[in-house]
View 1 (cartoon, rainbow, N blue to C red):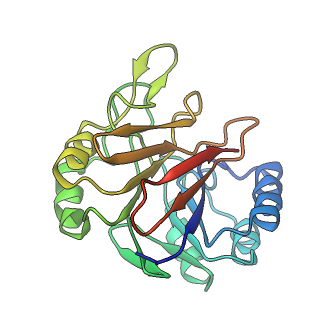
View 2: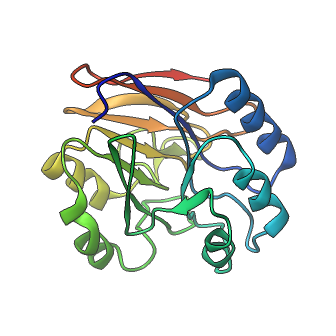
Length: 217
């Protein structure tokens, strides 16, 4: 972990809209975060090299995972963007802060699973998760900032179990547009950074020893 304060600008659910990308660019210019995290649903079912290019051109490193609406070509386009890194089943370290990610979810308004191989995927990446890391996923954990279409819980039970077992410092998610916000599960700060129709995500500050803080934008 970096000795001084480290700032994360977290967003999710851009869905290829230009106005949401404009909002992000404006916040990056104003807030000057150390990193931009996009927690899935960057595009629609087909990715756009031009849209990803605008993310790539931002003056800040960009970390992403894919969501349920992102097409199969997203990872290929990200690979051509040197300033954008896919965290799917990978880790990345920026200024001493470790990020670990896992993309995907099932696009139904009920309990989510991470793609269709949740147990396998969690098994592949849980060894990367420690108490000092930031975990980036698309759906929220079950029962936390996951109520959609009224009071239906659409989060992942596998992620909730993972939080209690591994206690990462922060979990960044999106997917449920109706529930942007933040809370704690035990020691883990959970931030639903969905942009929805009018939001801009969240600004998260990490200190060497302090409890992380968050401001919704």
